[in-house]
Length: 173
Image 1 (cartoon, rainbow, N blue to C red):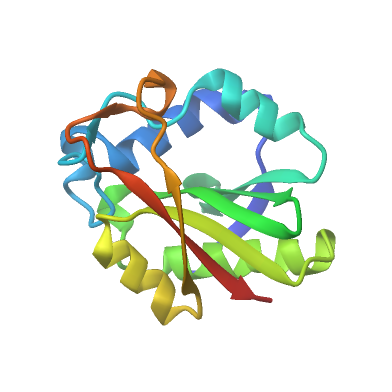
Image 2 (cartoon, rainbow, N blue to C red):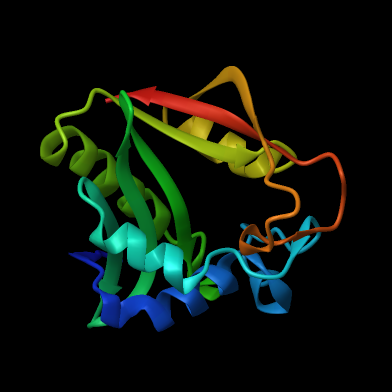
């Protein structure tokens, strides 16, 4: 399944809200392997953050499309000395078909070629060992650094447990 790519616009925000939520939260997310439904309830992203990411300098919300339909997304931006990769979502029913690999490679290309960066960084909920293993297989490594989960900020979800934190992964580009 070969993807076409484009950058999101404000008109894509409603679709992005649905796609990102479907990939991580609620019952639909359980159809794929990226679900966080056992860890978090609530939303994964809000419209205001999406609008800010779409219009920010050195920031792209990448859309992966097939036959004109958006089937995946990811956010790529410059954060300090590295590219940052996040908000990575594929419709749950389509996961496991190589879509994510294509999205990740294109995001790395944007960071390297468009933003002239030599390092990509991401944060993954530490309890998501299967997801961390996915990134390790693609050349990322655990840095040993962590970032706290934003407890109390419902924009990032409603935690179902009190031990969440993010592992920071990096990959030279």
